[in-house]
Length: 235
Image (tube, rainbow, N blue to C red; front, side, top):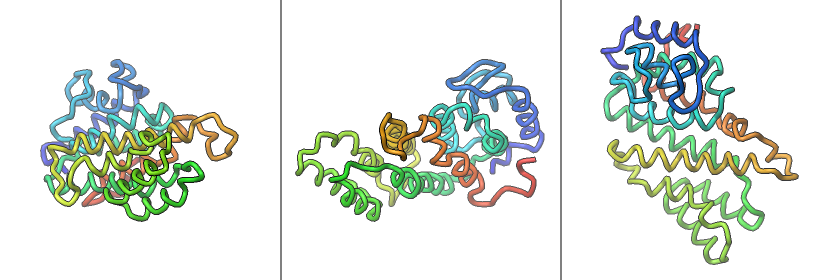
């Protein structure tokens, strides 16, 4: 956690959050987004720039997810209680790299398995999920192209995320593009879950589809890594 971030700063953010409802975009003074609420509490400025004491990976994750997951998620008790801790989450580059890999695991373990592919792609999709790699994602796309499947672009999300850069040597300079690809994959799956269809699995609103990915639980794990949160952190 950032040494420049104090208990008083955290309490300031908590008090401010108790007075507002969180909105999408940057928002307004009385209805800011998650990041703008932190900045308003700390500096009085309405903006969604990363506070110096915040993890760049966590900042980017919050920025994208709080809009996509909708008002019910971003105004949930857990999400709001986590924001003061997210504000002081800056850590060494090695920890930031590990956090990014945690989000990559979330894509493979939580997000992509919720997607139900076309029937003729089921076995190949399952093989890709077991492979969890750029090679596995590329093999899946090759399978689609060989069969001249019409929806290749929609299924390229895993390959795009895996090819953003070399996960064996994570470089934070490239973290933004990689994280964008992962969140695009989540958005694609959320869209497939919220289509109008007779299939019971797809009877979700877009926000509900995103909430099924449990983004608040992932945010908590990102903040907790590597030292955990103290008892009573959400009180």
